[in-house]
Length: 411
Image 1 (tube, one colour):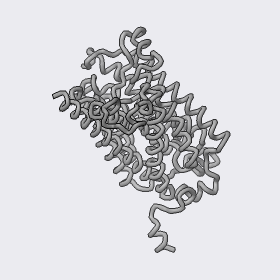
Image 2 (cartoon, rainbow, N blue to C red):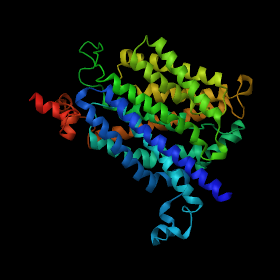
Image 3 (tube, rainbow, N blue to C red):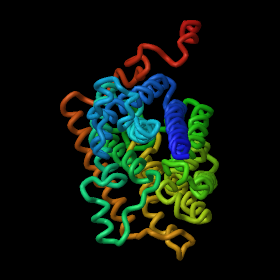
């Protein structure tokens, strides 16, 4: 029975890893549908390359930074005696599939950033940023919250009586990604033609609403692996997480539909805002609380996207700061509200701990984003030339358009 339980846990976490891995296809198509046609190929290549680079960096460095576990120290790897059963090969390789699962989370950070800096960021400097972020920046905060690094959770417990609660990463993943992206966007500047000489907004329409919608559907489906399988064991799985994810998603959709006045981009991203926000407290809040959390996140995304684009003149192409950075921060704080027994939750949380943990994530991400992209800008450069940007990233970087056959026929 022990062997059966271990095997079941391995399969459970593996299915979660596969579902979150599939979400990266959602990131890709959400960006493909939002950017101009001349940048669609670049969007696809960026996401898959970032995933590959992230996996390597997380395997050799990031996972060790976060949890103190290194696969390189295992004698079975060095000798090739995998069948010896030494960790991490013991327990049907549970540690290995856990790494796979957590690596898909780590790779989500550059995928989030990609949407904010789309259409004008150079390819290789962003790959360099991915290396630093996934190897060092993200794992530090991940280890503080989900590991035992720097004594952070012990300190939180001493101060507030309970640790910072982030079940599936509203703050650890999404807030970090969104605020890192904001730093990158501010350093990079707006796209050419986004604002005219008088400062008025110039509309740049998405290239494909169907591709955008497909990206959202893929993300929504995979999100149930992201949230539910964060239990990381079959015995810990909870139907509450599933229903709360569902309720937050539909709350985000309806709120964005109303607030965004039927705009399809807002509607589809509203679903994602709700899912981002529920990650932290999906295991402790009441389904009605989850509905409210998702609805607030949907409204927050729509309003702040419009404010940052129109009033603040910050050109975040996919709106990743309001979608991940702000909705994620709201989710972290909301877990401390709706997780309380007085509001129908299961308890065991503190609003003070949730606010403190969320602000810690914001501070680390924002400072790291500004510092990293300022350094890259000052050294190797991070932006296309005006001519390259006008031509588009597809031809500038990859020497091919999204529909090359049509180009040949047209020529």
